[in-house]
Amino acid sequence: MTLDYSNKTILVLDDQKSFLAVLKSMLVSLGAKHVTACHNCEAALTLCAENTFDIIICDLHFGENRKNGFEFLEEVKQKRFIAPHTIFMLMSADAQRPMVLGSIEKFPDEYIVKPFSRALLDSRINRQHKQKQALLEVYTHIHQADLENAILACKLMMQQVSRYRDVCLKILIKLLWQTHQYREAHQLLNALPQSSTNHWLNVSRAQTELLLGNYQEAISIAKSVIVRNTLFVDAHDIISSAYLASGKKREAFYAIENALSVSPHSLKRNLLACEIARENAEQSNLVNYTKQIWDLTKHTSNFDIAHLCSHIRSHLDYAEHVHNKESKTRIQQNALKSLNSLAQQSNTKLKQVDFDPSIYAELVESRVDFQNQQWLTSKQKLGRVQQRLSEKYGDCPMSMIPDSVKAMYDHQEFDEAQQLLEKYQDACTNRDPNTEASLKRFSTDILETKNQYIQYNTKGIQLFDKGQFKSALVAFEQAQQVAPHNSAIALNLLKCQLKLIELSNAPNQPLLQACRNNYQQIANMPKLVNHALAFEDMKPLARQQLQLR
Image (tube, rainbow, N blue to C red; front, top):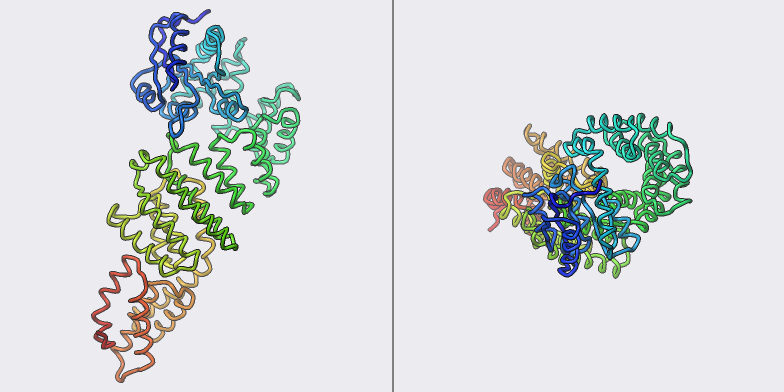
């Protein structure tokens, strides 16, 4: 039955007014009476939030730094702004392989290449309308996140003689994966006739084997698909994941590079690429992958300032592993340039989150100075950053915690770093995998030093509290040997030295001189806010005991 357009609400999006007029004219000639035209995705989102459209036809490209068709489709899906019966069609004049595959991977109901005829447009819309109506119960349950009933509806539909049986099967397999019913998916797929030319079946079998932990079988099946058609990018992803899970890191890296060369416009694929790059210590590739992730998310509902910070951090991590001075400097400068340009591109979004680009830039500069062995300058900047964050936000925002932790670890300020880590772990949900990996690496790199510091410092505090000041002094001195830049240790040592001087019956010149040296070192040392306050409290007693002006 031909679709009756007269009672359908239709939204069309294109930034070219001339084509938008042609498209609207096509739909009107097909009988449409309720066509809304829009020139950008931001305005269209507002329309979708307030209205239910039966058909949405959206162009892919809307100009630099504007939300594109990929991102619009993803956002209306996530926010459930489209009804189960809505037909979503992406259109583009770009027929290049990466763009076409990237469009298909976003799962629009249809993808059509410009220019197209009215007859082709009508045919595609009618085809999807019939399928949507036939499977409306399934789509409704999925829209409501009622996956178990969606599975039941699929199974009932498959028992009927229907032209949509294969479509139902594909939906069912995905639903079984989502609900972790891998064994049932395995049984269903293996019950089907085996075919070397049915690429969907073989990719699904490979994915199921991967989910079951049968990595070699997954690789074997996925490779057989690629031999016949290299464009099945899901097969490349499966091979990458299976190699990584089975400990074959280098093979995983080559496989994910192949996947990205086929279709680079996937957030999930680039996140996997980051994980594989870290395992292979491919720092330069990590810079590229994190940049792609930021580009893919900065205009979408997946916007997360952590993606921007991860990209900047990837430059700094790369610079840490480079020994050539010129190369290190170039990478560090690229970090600051990237922060500048990326922050400017996303200025509107940045205003909606607790993120100040100028404060973050100074934090990045602190890390750069530390890498360049300008330790005092680095510590001064870190102290200023903490002061500015306290004044503006009252506390360190989630977005700034990972780099603050790294900077504090660099300067051996373990207690403050631990406080921030605990705050992050308690408050931050839906964490960015790249940020998580960075924090884990930072913590691992300094674990031995940190544990020794904690051991000696804790021992010193316990002995001090018991009045065993000489033994406490030894413990604090041992802690300072382990972490010579740690401000808390220097303050604990000063407190202990002053106590021993106070209790001395006769002047102890070596102790007095050591205490004076420690006092001057702390006075000249750039300090974090809490250490600066603690030192101010100790100054009167220190001046009295040491006869300082």
